[in-house]
Amino acid sequence: MESTLQEVKDESSVVELKSTVHGGVQDVYGEDTATEDQFVTPWSVSVASGYTLIRDPHHNKGLAFTEKERDAHYLRGLLPPVVISQELQVKKMINCIRQYLVPLQKYIAMMDLQGRNEKLFYKLLINHVEELLPVVYTPTVGEACQKYGSIFTHPHGLFISLKDKGKILEVLRNWPEKNIQVIVVTDGERILGLGDLGCHGMGIPVGKLALYTALGGVRPSACLPVTIDVGTNNQKLLDDEFYIGLRQKRATGQEYAELLQEFMTAVKQNYGEKILVQFEDFANHNAFDLLAKYGTTHLVFNDDIQGTASVVLGGLVAALKLVGGSLADHRFLFLGAGEAGTGIAELIALEVSKQTNIPVEETRKNIWLVDSKGLIVSSRKESLQHFKKPWAHEHEPVKELVDAVNAIKPTVLIGTSGAGRTFTKEVVESMASLNERPIILALSNPTSQSECTAEEAYTWTQGRAIYCSGSPFPPVEYEGKVYTPGQANNAYIFPGFGLGLIMSGTIRVHDDMLLAASEALASQVSQEDYDKGLIYPPFTNIRKISAHIAAKVAAKSYELGLATRLPEPKDLEKYAESCMYSPSYRSFR
Image (cartoon, rainbow, N blue to C red; front, side, top):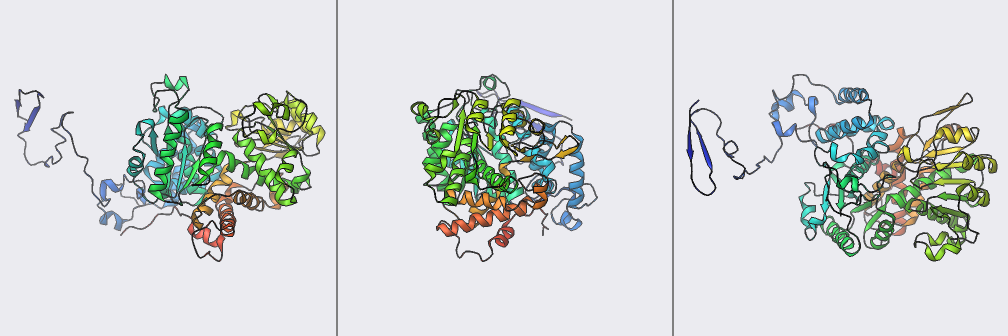
C-alpha cells in the first residue's frame, strides 16, 4: 500500500494521511484520519437496529431474537444461528453465576448482565430472589462499595458533585430517561456499617433501585440512582489511585446545604411534584435534617430511619403471635441511637399510642436506648443530639449494655449500632434469664457488623430466642433441631411502599402510611412460618407481599387526602399487581 504523506508546517502541525487504496467504505466521520486535536462527532441512529440494538440493554434479547426479528432489525449474522427462550437464558445465567465462588464476582457478573440485557437481569433476580438478593444487596453490596473504584466499568446512575453547582438541572437533563418516578440518592457518608465511602457509595442506590423493580415492580426506566459527591473524609480512598470521586475532604455547613437545596429544587422542577426521593445512607445529622426540611415540601422517604422502622415494627407485630401480649406489654432496649435506632423506637411508640390512645410522650417511656456513652437518661439531656432527647428517661446512669439489660429488664433487644459482636454471651444469657422467649434483633449490616450471629443467639439461649438479623445467616442446628433465622430486610418494605406512593400519585409521606405498611407485612406471615419460629414471610412471595403493602399504603394515602390519582381504584391490590413491571421479553415489529 502506497500513501502520500504531506506535512503541513503550521502552528498545529496537523498530519494529513491520504490513502491510495479505493473501494472501501468512506470515513464520513473522519475517525480514521483524526488526531487527538481534531474532534469527532459521536453520531447515532434514532431507531435501534442491528449492532446498536444488541448493545442496548433496554431492548436486547440476546439469542432470544426470533428469525423474523433478526430479518426486520438487521441482526442476521450478528448473532449465532440458534434461537433460545428466555427461560433457557435464565437457566444458563444462574448456572454461570453459581460457578463463581467469591460473592463479589457474582455481583460483578450481575451488574454486567444488567448493563447488557435488562429484562434478563430482572427475570433472573425475580426467579432466584432468595439466592441472588444477598448478591445484589446486603451483604455483598457492602464489599462492592468498598471496591467500587476497582470494579467500576460503566456508570449505572447519575453522579452529581460540587463541580456541578449551579448546573444540577442540566445534569439531570443529561439522563436519557425522562419519566422518572423514583430517585434513590446517597452522599456516601455512612454506607451500611462501613462508614464514609464517598463516591463509591453509588452501589447502594443502584442496588436499591434494582429491588424497586424486581420486588416492587416499578419499571426500570422510571428509576434513577444518584450519588451526590461532596468529597470524603476517608483517607484510604483519597490515597487510592482507583478512587472515582472528588479528592477532597467533605464539604459541610452552608456549602453542603446549598448543593442539596439546588438538587431538591431541580428534581421537583424536572420531574414534578410526585417524584419520590429516597434518602439512603446519609450520616445521622444530615439524615434527620434533610427529612425534617424536605418532608413538608417534597415526597421524601428515608429508608434508614423510616424503612428500617417499618420492617422491624412489622416483625415485632408478627412476633406477638409467638410471645403473646400486645406491643404495650413489652419493654424495648436498643443498642445504637442513630437514625435506625431512633426511627424504629419512634414508630413503635406511635403504634402503641395508636392502639392504646395513650399520648406518644407516655408510650416512649417503655423504650430505652443505649449509645456509645451508655444508657440515654435525663441527666445527659443537655449534651444529647436533638433526635436522642425524647428517649432520655429518668434513671441513674448505666455504662455497660449488660447492666442496662439487668436494670431495664427488656423483653426485646434491638441492635442498630453498626458495631459487630456487641451482643456478648453475657448480654444474651441475661436476656434468656429474664424471658422465656427473648426477642433478639441484631440488625446491623453487613454480616460482619451484626451484633451477634444466629448461632450465638440460639446456642446462648438454648434455642429459645426469636432471632432476626439485618443480613442473612444460614440455618443453625442446635441439639438436633434446625433453627431458621429471620432477616429484617428493608427490601420487605421499601419496594412495596414506593409502589403504593407512585400508583396513588401521593404527594407527601405520612407516618400512618409506615404503620399501614408494617401491619400489612405482619399479616403476610403464615402459620407455617410461625411454626418454624419465623416472624417474616419467605422472600419467594415478595412480589405478592409488595402488592399487598402497596395497596395498604395507597389506601391510607387516599384516606388522608394525599393521593392525586383519582378516582381511587376499586380493588387496590389487583390494581397494584396490574401496575407491576414484567421482565418478560416483548416482540418487536
